[in-house]
Image (cartoon, rainbow, N blue to C red; front, side):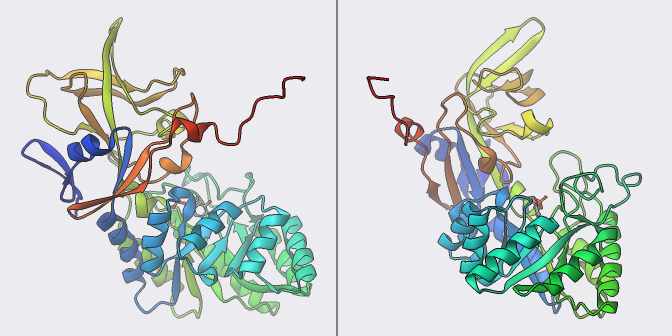
Length: 418
Ligand SMILES: *Cc1c(COP(=O)(O)O)cnc(C)c1O
């Protein structure tokens, strides 16, 4: 069900008018639908049925405490990539035993924190990391639960859009070399082998590459069993795509069905790490038109949100749907580039969009729930936006707008005599 509807010329998120939120809280503002986030998570949960599983929401997609708390209450686990994300999950009520820790650069301090916390599993990305975890775990006399992230080298010829599952990138360990790494892990005193992990990329819009990767990982699990290494869980990572423009990603239920079918009667717990597919289309960025400007044969709508608020268009040339919040019957439709105030030519949110707008009008930028706020910065000394969660006809500020004082926190001038 769509959580965004126009009634009497006013765009609503669930039963709240976006214009009312802008009037009360200002712009730019991130607005999320609690119902939309819950629905997406529950779609994963329900499709798993009887299958033993853990849905570990990928915190980096959107790390807001209120969102983590909402998901924790629904029974989510969490996929983290830093000590900061670990602290957030714990502060939001996430359970240590439902946390998996991914990432190629886990520091000594982060591994120590995770061991002391008692997380479910480290997704180990290199032999050097394996040795480091053993060393730290031995020092603390804690047994570290591990799985190894394998790089299944999914065929780029048939699936050219995959970016992290190929041999030549920094993630995981080559699948052909990994049995030896597992044997090494099995020989170490303070490691306990739990699973096999892979994550082949993001914004995948077909099921086939997931199944290809899974087939390779299942073969690996068989080979490990032959050498006496038992595997409890299969972590297939995240990466299911969403519709931004005209993509047709598989429905969550179909994706899970395909995975369950492939798993058959194997006695493996399934772990998934979805991020984008849970939050992307549950959130929008509200912004106000500051100026309309013509330059040569181009028209610009300069808005009060910018690349520091939403980096994806500038970074990936991502396309986001943009529409007016309130119908403007006086304005006529003109094709605009929607740009922010940041001093970069790359600072755009959308290009060549036909909109009937005037100065002061509000725009709604869709599909901003994932990799929006979590990738925001203070570039150009711009305070980060307010975040609001809508629950049917109520709304709650879940993070206040940063103040200008916040921007200077921790800074100091040099002493006079220097
Ligand atoms: C980013 C990431 C995810 C989440 O990916 P989405 O495309 O947002 O679902 C899951 N696992 C790992 C290891 C990641 O790096």
